[in-house]
Length: 265
Ligand code: MG
Image (cartoon, rainbow, N blue to C red; front, side, top):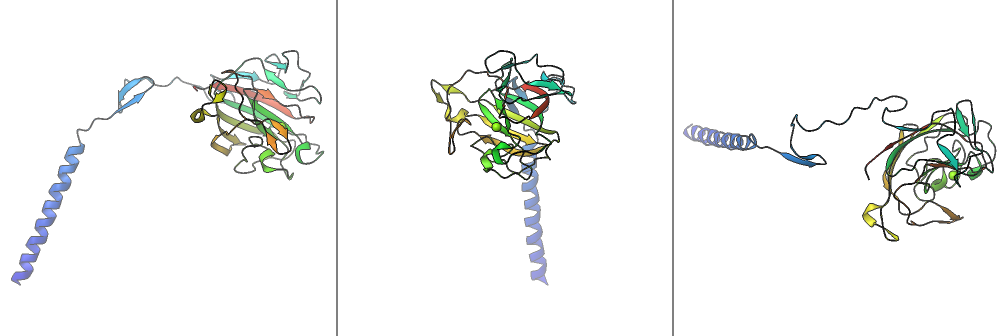
């Protein structure tokens, strides 16, 4: 009996001591104040004086977006040489015309968020790369492939939503031919030092295809230009800003509701 009492006293003593230790730790954490560095300075956590972000009204087009095409005309666009484009506008969308060449925005952008809606032809013709081929080019250089990839097999690094020749989309989120689809692209431009890309500042892509993530902060290893059946371009130095370009690949692909929000590099 005496041994049991002694054991109980010892156990209770440990519990009390452990409790004291725990309480001491909590008391040490209480007065801790944390600061964080930011673009607007160094701020105390939960400081109500920290600058709030600007307001943006969301919707079909965010209120701070630059609208490149709203379905009415091609006033924001030229052909690849800066002249009038032969692409046509009808039924609230623009459509590529075989032989007209690329169409490109007059305005130039750096890192950005780009929204594009597109539809491959409802009348299915051709196969592989010959079916509903077009493309969305960031800075006029880096292609997010547009293709009819609904029951149309091709090389995966050239199917719809591929970063052409480089990165296969995580999934095939393609809609049926003729149906409207969307890309939401978050792009960070590459930075060059002389004629070489800065290794830690290569281009990055996050892409949603019809609302589905298909590229999750992918680092682009080089250019996406087609050089041959099994060859694509490497990075080549270019200006800090470039146009949004859309490809004429001989198929009548339609586009609508195109807007850009510029981002910091
Ligand atoms: Mg293409």
